[in-house]
Image 1: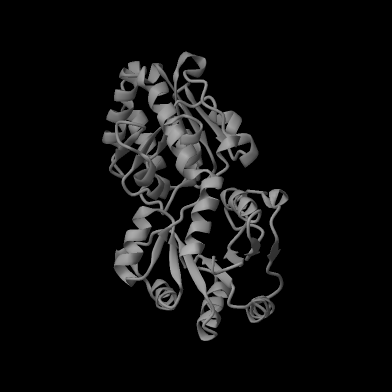
Image 2 (image 1 turned 30 degrees about the horizontal axis):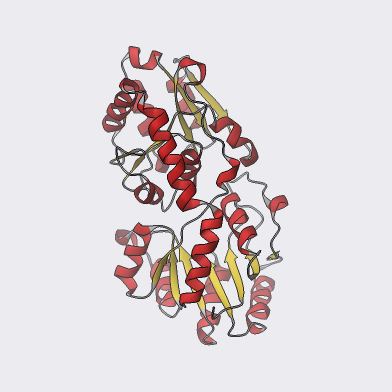
Length: 351
């Protein structure tokens, strides 16, 4: 391995990052620099689960930049910096400083839209050209970054602690339980789910329960439009540590995102043994769903296709435990944090 120390810069301690960093820190000297303790719209309180070496940037912008400069100036060439994200001014500054000092670093990012390469993204991509490599969050992201930059790209998506999620109990309450978990926003395809449900004939609705986990600006209208159905449940925000017990009642995980660079919630649902239904525009879905074998891929923003897929699943409910177990086995094999640690250590050996 060419590097004996890792310094990772990321926005905040999200569950899927903390779990991964905890296990990485067991095998290599690691320091994680978090820009913030939390960000707007996120209610995670995962700081208490951090067991890896870390700091939070503090103070105003000038003080935060000085903190980063001191950290970079004190590092040697056996230290690899990994910078996640381009929307944080402090991290853009770190990229520029690392480039000027010819220090080794890697960019870690989700896929970007080629049609929306705004000035900010173009500026960051021009800095990334001088990085040692790109760590992409999924195969879709890898192909996009390579197409743009023609530089080494390694597939390194988010990984989760799969041991926390037990297998679904299946057909809880004698119904087929369709579940959505995530932000209640348009980009996640929540309106697609709503329109699909409202398009179902009554005999299909009677066989089903629909569970919505999460909060967001569309929650109120969603409750209003689906409130007439007695078999729809809204849970609001659920702390991460309480999700596994709730996921146990799910049979089918609906995640019809219009656009998602990765989509950790989908991986969690599959780990719980739910049959995933997601879109071609969701990174985690394309990489982990084998259509018709362990789940279903549909076009984004297509409630009719989602509705017909739901009807097919209801008509063939005997397939749910079979496909759910396949989904669970697949993500445990490919998306567990221990697998993620091995992938990253192998990447470091190759650099």
